[in-house]
Structures are given as structure tokens and as C-alpha cells.
Amino acid sequence: MYFILSYAVRAHWRAVLKLVLAITIASLAHAAEPPPGRGEQLPTQPSAPQQRATLLARLVAEALQNNPEIQAARNEREAASQRVAPAGSLDDPMLEAGVINLPTDSFRFDREDMTMKMIGLSQRFPYPGKRGLREEVATREVEAVDFNLQETINRTVRDLKVAYFDLGLVHASTQFVEKNRAILDQFLRIAETRYTVGQGNQADVLKAQTQLSRMMEEIIKLGRERRMLEAEINRLLGRGLGAAPSVPEAAELRETPLELEALHELALRTRPQLLALQSAIARSDKMLELARKDYYPDFDVRFSYGQRDSMPDGTKRSDMVSLTLAVNLPVWRDSKRGPRLAEAQAMREQALRMFEAQRNELAMKLRQQVAAIDQNLRSGRLYQKDILPQSRLTVEAALAAYRVNRVDFMTLLDNQMSVFNFEIAHATTVAAYNKALAEIDLLTGMSPN
Image 1 (cartoon, rainbow, N blue to C red):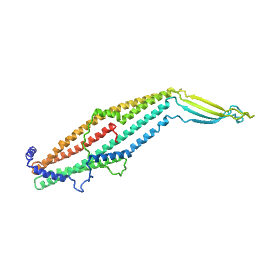
Image 2 (cartoon, rainbow, N blue to C red; image 1 turned 90 degrees about the horizontal axis):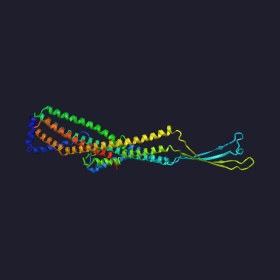
Image 3 (cartoon, rainbow, N blue to C red; image 1 turned 120 degrees about the vertical axis):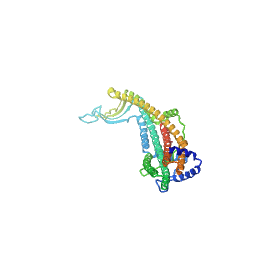
Image 4 (cartoon, rainbow, N blue to C red; image 1 turned 180 degrees about the vertical axis):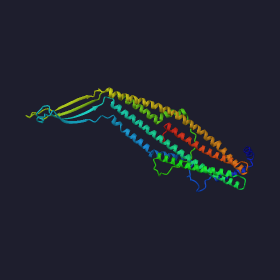
């Protein structure tokens, strides 16, 4: 009954207490500043949007340069590109030299007409079309590796942005806790003063002290989260253990027009993960065609030259040349070439099914992120335009009424804690909005450059 009456009186006395409210607001603004030497000193953060973008862009550039996973993917692409030329090249020719038809009774080169010193050269020629298919298979593999590199880059940038906005949320939450602790400290002094002169009770003082202790616990928890996020950012940037942590600026709620169908079409065209799977499908097609070509024989061409010594009576013998052509016979077709063809068909089906699965997952994630962005945008606007201004006015009015014994201390304290919770919720909503945008960039294949 007293609670309802106090709010009625507060509405009636709003005009009368206008001057008191102005003085109170000034007092709260002064009390909201953390006192020197108390708690953790946060670095000054620039608020210009261009500075924020520049800082994030510098971090992204550093990650692209130093991230070990990206460097490993670049090395993998370089290794794959070096396999294209050898895949379409001929095998090395074979050089042979020896003695033919040397008699064992005399080991002389002039006794028998068929004895000769021989030197030969042989070369294997694959069936027409095999070399081109092998080179196309290697080329498609390079394409897939290149798309995987871009996917690795985009995923690393996404992870960096998520950690960046989470760290910004931790810093903003720390500032809100410090501000709320300063306000609660002001409330505590007021409650102690009223208790000293007999206008308050001890329960109000104890409640304020309990809330201050909870704020200290929250600062400890936020400190742990900050160190974890700083370590994650340093990992993504390729920094060492003792590297200086990055201090993000406050995130902003910038409205970005999004259309689900357009995003889905863009993702199907530009998402590196899907393009890599398409390259894998094309590679499987070439491997299947190559497996069918394996049923056709390869050719071995051999040329040799034989030098013969003169006869014992001095008559000169003519040298000899030989030219032969050999083909391999697919005798072990069922046990060797058949399984390779079945393997190629299975790999092609696997690539197709993986592409369909990733495409469906992409559509699902896009829908989720667009819904999350819409929700966070609406919630952020509601907090910014309605909830936070109204809750702050409620605290100002409750404090003024408490000073003249119109509102009990618990109502004042609950109103202040509501403001604190709304500020944290608003900052969380803004961070979630920006993280969802970073996720959209990854899903649509948006290049960080």
C-alpha cells in the first residue's frame, strides 16, 4: 500500500521536485566517475566511427599477415600449384646400355655376328587424353585449395571480429559496473546518513553493502573474461604471449539493410566453401573420366643402336638399329581398374552430397543470422529510445523521493539495478548485432579486403 501511494505522490510532486532532480542528476554524474586509484583504470577510447573502423582494419591486416593457419593454407596452395605441370608431363625417358650375345667361351666381340655393344632409349606415351585429364585433375585441385584458403581467411577474420566485439562488450560492461558501483556507493552514504539521524534502518545499509560486493564480484569475473578474449585475439593475430592486448572501441548499432533471398543468391555465387566443393565435383568428374581411360593401354617406344666389331679376318660388320613398340595388356582389369573406377564414382557422389549438405546448411544459417540481426536491431532501438531513458528517469525520481522519505530504499535500489541490467543488456544486444553481421560476411563469402 505504501509502495503504490509513494508512486502516486511521486507523480504529483514531479513538478515540485524538478529543482531537486537537477541537483541530483549533477551529483550522480559526478559520482558515476570512478575515483582515482580505485578499481581498474580503463584506457581512453576514441569514439569516432572512422577510428573504430581503422583499428579493426589494422587488426584484420595483421591477422592476414601473421596468422599461422592462413600462412599454412597459403603454403598448401603453393604446393598444390606445383603439382599441375608434373601431372601433365611425360615420364622420364629410360637410357640403357649393355652387351648383347657375348659368347661365354671366349668373351670376344669379334667371334659372333650377333655380338654387339648396345645403347638404347625408351619413352612411355600414355594413351591420348590421359595427360590432359591428369593436368585438369591437378588444376581443379588447385582451385579447391585456393577457395579453401579464402575460406580460411574469411573464417579467421570472422573469429577475430567476434572476439573483438566480445572484448568490447567486456570493456563496456566493466565501465557500467564501475559507474553502477559509484552510484551504489553514493546510495550507501545516503542510507548511512539517514540511519545515523534515525530516518533509515540498518537493513538499507546492509543491502547497499551487499550490492557493492556483488559489483566487485562482477568486476573479477569480467577481468577473467577480458584476459581470455585478449589471449584469443593475440592467437588470431599470431602474436606472442607477452604481446600488448588490443583495446576495442565501443560498438555501434548501425542499421544495415539485409534481404534474405539476395544474401542467399550472393552466397551461392561467392562463398568459397561452396566454390571449393564445386571444384571438387569437377575434379571428381575428371578423375572418373581418367579411370575410364585407364582401360586403354599406354605405349612404350624403344630405340636402340648396336655396334659390332669387325670379323677376325678384318672384314667389317655393319652396326644395327632396333625400334620396338610395346603396350600394356589390361589383364588385371577386375582386380585393379574396376575398383579404381568404382572409387572415382563414389568420390564424385560424395562431393555432390557434401555440396548439397553445405548448401542447405548455408540457407539455414543465413536465415538464423538475418533473424538474429532483425531481433537485435529492434531490441537495441527499444533499449536506446525507450527502456533506458525511462528507467533512468525512474531512478532520478525515486532518489529525489527517497531523500524526502517518499520512497523506501529497496525501491530506489531495485530501480538502479534495473538501469544497470538494461545497460548491460543493451551493450550485449549491440555486440550480438555486430557479431551476426560478421557471421553474414563469412556466410556470403565477403572478402576482408
